[in-house]
Length: 139
Image (cartoon, rainbow, N blue to C red):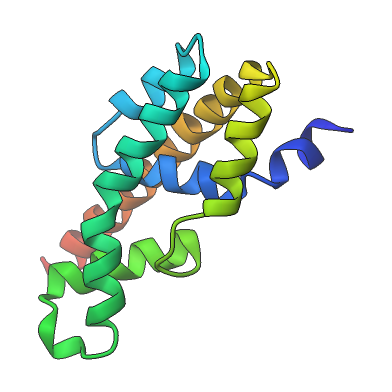
């Protein structure tokens, strides 16, 4: 199995972790990158899901009635939807990762962390560029 195929089944998980990190919460992917057992990976994934849960709930409910969301919340919800495709947690991918780690394939979790970090940096850079161009347009 080639690397691209091996990691394509974790695409939404990588994006989820990247979103958390792009918010400045790198501890989750740092912990996954340094994990030495399933428990650390599991705890880190739990923290990422817990971090995103309020946003996902608010966005899911708010998209039904946009009047309930502030402009900043609408932008955040759009960012989440653009990245993840919807407002759900990639449970199948989380389960697949935990099964792989349980089988001794801890290196997959570490590679996912590296991909998430790279994607987070790309998200942060894109967001900063968008904010800079938007503020330049306002002037």
